[in-house]
Image (cartoon, rainbow, N blue to C red; front, side, top):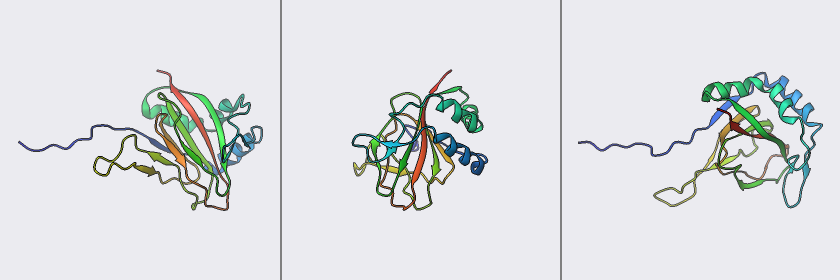
Length: 177
């Protein structure tokens, strides 16, 4: 007999390029003018999450429908945007570890950032079995990349070390069927 090594768990994530990003970036930035980011409470970043964002999901879906359909086709399920918001990080601003719930998917579109901006880090849900350390995975993304993952994955945005603002659009989705 031989020894077998397998993976016990697999957590999927998807990276999707925003098609025609230059054109869509202008439309998205213009769209967000009606939903400005502001600082709230003790948050170290600006967001529109605590503001009225009526109609934002429909407007976003009109612009990024191709990318949302790519995801739907890949997972062979219909998806529905339940909530959507933007976040802006000036130099030194960050977002502490958090998740978005226990079911469904979360998307992040990297709308504005330069290559020096620290990327979102995803936290493995279990410690390393040898060192007992927490494992972080910063995914290699560039402006225009969309990352989709299960909502239960903890993640954070390290302090923005760039002089340029980092801005993302994030949304939570439910699986319809």
